[in-house]
Amino acid sequence: MMKRNTWIWVIAFILLAGVVYDHAQAGRIPVAAWVDKITGKAAEEEPSLTTMAAQYALKPGTPAPSFSLPGLDGSRYEVGGARDKVLLLNFWASWCDPCKEEAPDLVSLASRYQDSLDLYAVNVTLYDKLEQVEQFVKEYGYTFPVLLDEDEEIYRKFGGVAFPTNVLIDKDGIIRDVIVGTLAPDELEAKIKKWM
Image 1 (tube, rainbow, N blue to C red):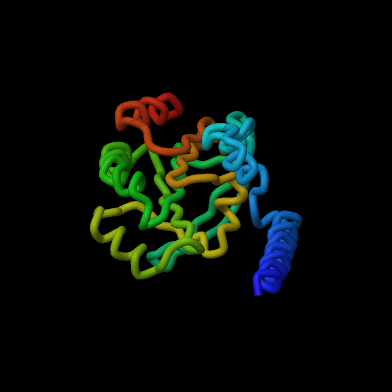
Image 2 (tube, one colour; image 1 turned 30 degrees about the vertical axis):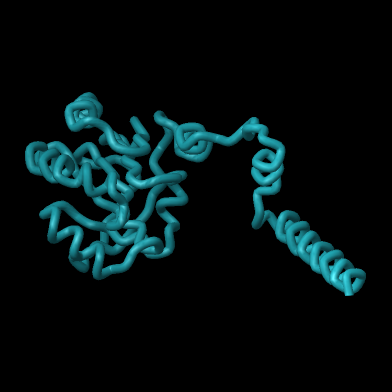
């Protein structure tokens, strides 16, 4: 009986090892992280959020990608090239706690600088639900356009890696800053005022 159980365990282990290997080859399991945990070694190169953002985000000084998106209000919004006002694109999701934290600051900025600043809140709807988006907009009193990036295409164009991501675009359509995460309200305001 003992010999039979041993063979069952051996076969089960071989099958499990095969599944793990197959998933690792397909990139679905971070094998290096498992090895580090088993051996007690820390991961040598696990990129931080800032590193990932720097790697994938568009760089300041480059033209902003052109795009057109539908708004929650039924209008269509265009971005690209020269414009009358500085533009702040705010990529967000309704479930994102830092997005909730910065929402009142965005409402305040949009209200104070309505003559010199356009603020477009780009909801990455692929990761959200429309009902929750509408509830968020109502709860925080958004009066500026809320655009719906339904398939994440625009978020990817701008190299988004986390919510919120704010992209500051000057009147010539040039990206001047990419801010991943939240900033203190006065810091964000100072960055915007620099390009007005």
